[in-house]
Length: 72
Figure (tube, rainbow, N blue to C red):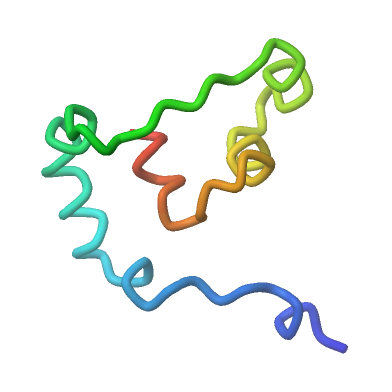
């Protein structure tokens, strides 16, 4: 069994560089949008995932296509 068979392939939209340009040009709008949700991270989670934001976001069930947006 190959590791490539186990890993999830990203959505087609995430593979397009224009997706990242779109996100970066709309950061302010997305932060202020009424349906934007804030998720509080506990001290225990912060300590467990120190230096591993991707791992923290995975544990919070945040879809991978939103990880980049959270980083910027």
